[in-house]
Amino acid sequence: MSARSRTRSAYANPVLIGATTVLVAVVAVLMAYNANSGLPFVPTFQLRIDTPDAARLVVGNEVREGGERIGQVSNIEPIPAPGERGGTSAQLTVQLDEKAIPIPDDTTALIRARSTLGLKYVELRRGTSPRALEENAVISVAPAGIAPELDDFFDVFDERTRDAVQENLTNAGAGFAGRGPDLNRAFAALPDLLGDLAPVARTLARPDTGLRTFIAELADFARLTAPVADSLARGFGLAADTFDALTPRPGALEELIAESPLTLEVGIRELPRQRPLLRALTSISGDVRASARAIRAEAPAISRALASGTRVLPRTPPLSDDLRTSLVALRGLAAAPTTNQTIDGLRSTTATLNPTLRYLGPHITVCNYFNLFWTYLADHLSETVPSGTLQRIQVKSAPLTQDNTLAEFGATAPANGGEISAAERTLLGDPVELHAQPYGRAVDEQGNADCEQGQRGYPERLADEAPPEFKIAVDPRTPGSQGPTFTGRPRVPEGQTFSAEPDGLGPKVTP
Image (cartoon, rainbow, N blue to C red; front, side, top):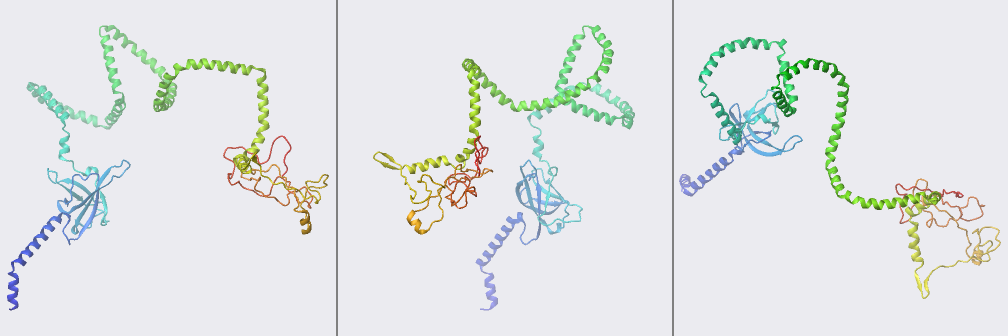
């Protein structure tokens, strides 16, 4: 079989031709379906547009410039609205043809209506800046750049507005009905009126007329009187009642008019004297306004207090009767001759105890000696015997052959460890040393923990006033800070007064 015949047979194969047709149709459908997102292999320029409202745009809407299509909307997503009020706005992503670039950086965008059925498109208004926007740059649409919706326009004519328009048309029709001759005369007189209006308008337009200033002041007057419009209306109503009462008496109105010049003269003379009072009232008004705001804020609490008072006050008479008895007894106590003596004694007792408490307080609050005493006491008294509880102690007797021991009467020197030989130690036993350090500290002068009792050991020598050969510890202070106990705290609690040394009226301890 020749190559030509094989080629002819391939093109004549209906399966191949059908598959090719289906493939072309599928590719065409996919391209048509994705046409809203842009055709493949076509270069585009992407731009982002921030708008307060997407205004019913959809993906695939056109982007135009001067009426010509230059791209399409490829994405719409919500973003946080700028400013402090929050909310949500929209960001449009548009794909522009290459023929539309470069785009100046002062280009603006609008959202316009393409038809009355709601179809929209984005219009770009090219700026004049020499600098061009980069790809993915962001431009903004002002609120005025969104075309109003037709249904929003028709929403203005709600049921209340339609009723008002109908009523206006009805009243206007009734007003013009049957007044054809009058309207004809009015139209005939208009040329003369308009002819005289021209010189009047020229006169009003002259700068020396002050019409602009008059209108501005009139606007300020209207702005100032708007908050008191209701009061002015009531004033006109009362004035109408006043004139209605004066109508039956024409002489009274004449007397009022005759007395008005004198009243005005008195006002001109006296009103300037009231200016200091008015200034003082102005300053007071600010304070009163602040007080009024405070009272307004506290009014609920005051109301609750008054409501509680109305429930409690009826129960106060029995309390007053009981309180009268207590006050009579208190008056008798105050008048008793021994009360002053008791108070003086209590004052003296307090003055005496206060220095002691200042010194002893840190022993409890910092070193926890009170609790530690009972803890160790529980361990100390822990063995039970048939007759009760056994106090376990070991009596250590001083060696009788050592000079000046604790057991020797007539000693000539304090019990002293001294230096002894090994033979003497074997013969005499351990030497007795005197350790008596009273008034141990709990804190230092700055309130830091210095718990000396129970954790300073037995110094070999601590006696500044004793001769150097005596190895005794009698000075109340051990050098250095001993710190807190294992259950104590590092310093005096906040607000507690303290004293590192006993500061009573008795003799002072010499460190």
